[in-house]
Image (cartoon, rainbow, N blue to C red):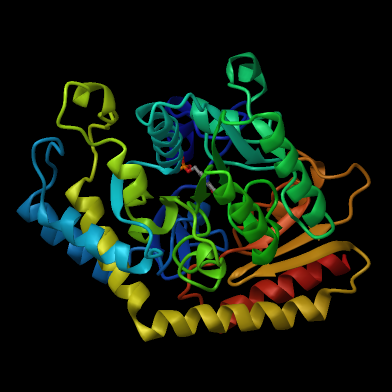
Length: 426
Ligand SMILES: *Cc1c(COP(=O)(O)O)cnc(C)c1O
């Protein structure tokens, strides 16, 4: 049996109807490209599900992980600590807004979100208030575990579980034209639920899986300050937007009012290893402290076997070194600049409903007869058109997007732009 047949025999892939599924076997990655077992090259325009920042198999990150593996590969993180976790916490806090004081480690974006929700709800309980309601955006995506599913848009992905998801107060995201409505819905939700809302969680500036929907910082800021006036905790899910994607280090760097908590994952290790972080203010952290009889009730009882895995920390530290390099900042500006030119070039195309950009993320929403749905046939047409041309483009329904590793070359970007033009022409 060849690799594709062996895969079919034994493996169940994520987000995949396995009947008739066929998976390309990739054996090598280098820079923004990956190579299949027949030597065919593909440009990874989606950064392997938005994780890769500096290119595949980056030698510097690989070397730092290897060095750490020879030193200390993993360690129970209760009762013990280790230098890579300490150094990563110190260095990440320098990039996060100054109100962020403590980091809590987990493994993936969904768990970072679960941790933030549990922290927010227990925060209120520890303070003697019963606040358990959550406000979230429509069209949001925060992960696939039960809490994360609950606060995300209800749809085809989580349909079998709808009866089991907890109730959430959904408001419109302040996308263009909905800024006023969004704020009004938030104010109404607060008025209707006095002293029972624990937190407001949101994807800042770009709602990724919802279709790369974008809103501006001022509109989001208005919502955050409204929450702050009412003592509601605000949680920025920067799992996708973090680490330079939006042009700044964090999307929240565009905001005047800083969120109380942050969820980080995807780009954290440069796309090398699964790791996540939930950060919070000292106000949140201090609510869990006690030396008295109630200490046991105030403790945050959450953890994962691989919490703060030293290899993940080493990868994250190496990726931070690269993030802080001038060359990376220049790449981010270069990509944003090229996207902007291309956006203007195609803006009037009759096949296009909307072109949006936020930093290195460019989204092109196509007109369709049926409206946008993840499984629309246009999605498959796009996917195969680009795959045949050596480009990995996984549209979200009728929305194509580019979110490349920062090291992508001008030539590769130009080739992708030209392929998009050819797609629009056909
Ligand atoms: C991908 C994503 C998640 C979930 O992260 P996983 O690592 O896939 O569990 C959560 N929030 C946002 C905004 C995401 O884009």
